[in-house]
Length: 191
Image (cartoon, rainbow, N blue to C red):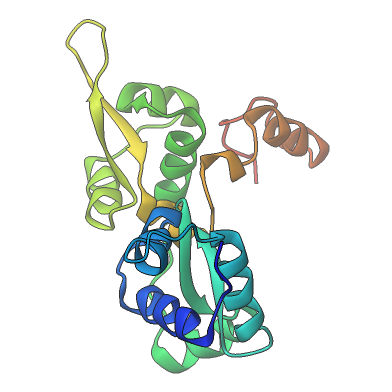
């Protein structure tokens, strides 16, 4: 193991800033250790980076199996007003996205069944165009319908490290019952 130097942190900082995707542990290892054949304590490097940004306008955030730099959450709302926030996803698109995320890989017909409502092709097109969902092969059933899954863009957008960070369907159903809404996960709420 080698100690984390200021130069190491500068390199990782530049890597996080320049990468369009979350930076993986393997990328950090390659950036800092491969040239010299050193074993790098990647969690220690990331912890040092996080400490460097603590209390600042940006932070190191876990996303999609790696890390990225993002706006500090307490400033995100203020910046959204200044920069012209993107339009939020329509409710139908959020419901479709939730069904896919919680039950993936899933067919369109299964999404319709989970939502108990029709799904417009435009909704799927929007989610694909935004990079939030992608094809995941075909189901082994008559007609071989397309399967859908979420993407790393989905993880990044919602600040998730992995799909394991999603709430389980049974927890959502219990929450819905406690709120006096539908009884099954995936059922649309009454209000």
